[in-house]
Length: 167
Image (cartoon, rainbow, N blue to C red; front, side):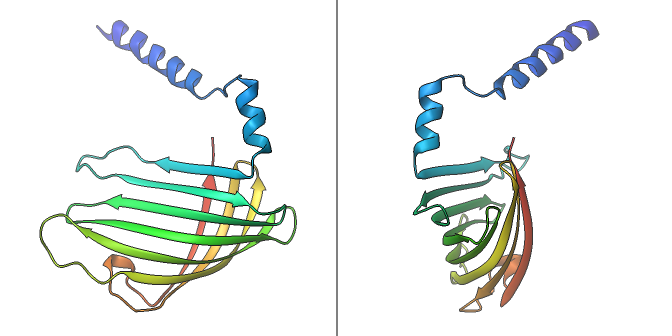
């Protein structure tokens, strides 16, 4: 029985590893590299309490130094779901360093008939650095306009440091 489990485990590892290889369809690669639109996204697996955490963004490159991005975050929890929609402007001052400015709205979605807090309206300012095409780091300052006490992050301002690794 243990040998069968090992064989199945190795087979699944090979299948998952093969799924990470890039697509060899050259027509698809060429069309995405020449397009000014881009998309990005990720989702964590469903946890024990059916929690879902996902993020996606849709962007458009206006020129080599300036782009507009629409982002959506959606997190589910036991009592409330939280959704954050933001529009951000990125201005590259060098090949890898950029400034970020944007507006966002974050709200709770009720699941059980409770009263939800007012949505938060946020202004974001910050800067980021693209280490390479698969790694980025960003520092943002979020300023909450209406001081809504929404969840654990219901503070008037928030300084966040984040990074993203794509693979």
